[in-house]
Image 1 (cartoon, rainbow, N blue to C red):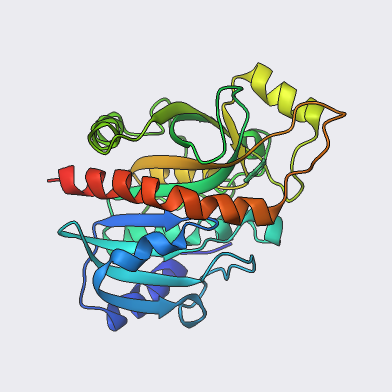
Image 2 (image 1 turned 120 degrees about the vertical axis):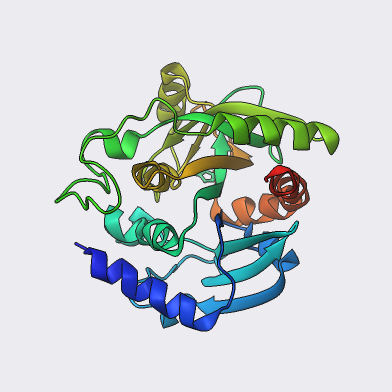
Length: 278
Ligand code: HPA
């Protein structure tokens, strides 16, 4: 278990390496790390250099923080994240979110690669999360389990407003202005690392999921516990297979490949949202 000093130590290292004081955090998922390339005046910090920071072992995750300016706002971007399936505890997976909170970050934009569960979704589409099914967390794999750290937030929190409405409205406007069709849907957070079986995909659809992925929900829970505003997007990197005799299999390579196609769309939406912030 991490304690308040662990988060502070990591924040102090970051503060010693940059003069920027970010108020906005960006978490860039599989194949989406290049979204940080347009950050100007940037200071980069390797995850290895930050005490307690979970290293990403997954191909497609660079493993560094990029801190600088994007659309006139000071942002801290995480190029790659750690996942529960890598063997990290939920507390380790969400360590970066609490460090951001200690740094004064008040808004976090999470991105992920996800499988399309909604039958209308195609590879390359972008979905904004309006809500999630925290399948991994509801029954016990939850970063808030354990002694509550009161300096971050209270023991019990509501989750009626996981994704901020004002930010979602800004994203809708940014997408419309850029001519990008933006789905709005429910993300099912699972542990992975296997992709879902066809029966599981049909189950997720019956439960109300539009997309499925192996990240994000734990970060949202911890960010909301800290009182941060959260906005999140899924890049649909594959259509989840829902039929048993379909020839084919979801795989990480197609996830990374589709990520490239998604980058310009997500970039336009994220830039538009940043631009709209006061
Ligand atoms: N399932 C779970 N996670 C994913 C998928 C998927 O189909 N695609 C990208 N991440």
